[in-house]
Length: 273
Picture 1 (cartoon, rainbow, N blue to C red):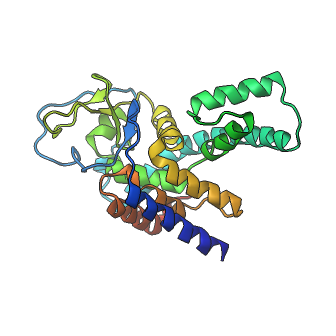
Picture 2: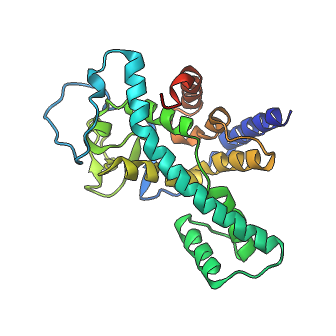
């Protein structure tokens, strides 16, 4: 029953978001799964050199679908788990501090400095008191299920075959807005100046994706659903949390449905085998 209530809650907040649909601030990087451009559109004008020195598997050469999926997921999974584990460690620190505040215990100078550091890193705003700051941190310093990250990466990068994945290790459709920050889309509309971010390591790409989900105002609904799952002592399931990704793509609900379908169809590949 609790899980059903959370699903209803998730759908409710998504519906509310669709009604009000606020446009939030553009940050240095913005994750948008937009028009699926540059995956297989038009002839390649020139051979681009990778902007990294990572030895990528040649995903496009793998004909067998099962093998391609396993190779792709196995390639990304270690970095996703590594970064989620780092976040878990930070979350435990925030929970410990929150428990001390609830017990009316004072914080050490080290704990106060830690809170100040996290408040800056996670862009906590409109929280004048220490208690409010820590409560907001609890909604932001948290993981994204590995299955959900893997499926989004597969969707955004066409299973690692997109130009952006090959050249810039950008598996998540992340845009940037400073000239030279990445790769210029071949089909970028006239008048636009965004680029597709490039990373020098898979670790940096994964870290940026997770930080964006945890800090960008656009994903406040996602974080609310996640907090509600915690409050009801329910697991953070990829299927439920996917409903909070409506702003990730201008395709909106169609994108969420596609991600949800991919989660269901690829469950057997999520565990390392």
